[in-house]
Image (tube, rainbow, N blue to C red; front, side, top):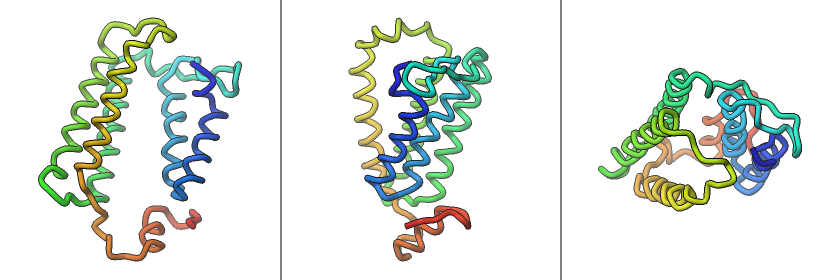
Length: 168
């Protein structure tokens, strides 16, 4: 993996997301990606640029990997759907349909043919960007709001974090 996927860069990206957004949960979410990669990847994730490399290798067990990753995706969806309320019919179904599509893509990634050499992934770029754009459209058309939107900004952020976690 490139050094951009290192632990050091995950910490840097997390700090940057926090500094730009002022929402601690965004920094935590960014960092959690590296933690999940640590569980799934073979020992190819650098701690810093040039190594050492770590990874627990869940990918060696395709069925377990698919189940774990799908369950995490669905749990995330449930948390999101319980924390928000749809404003329109599109908001009720678009996100669930998008997650179903992600589960299908995950199945193809795990059970399909192996990817080409990492450095030769140019052909994935258009589909990745299309998927990213589609995901953003789903999120925007989802038009979901917090069920407690009438609460103050501070009260809302305090409800997102357990007792003892500082919020701004």
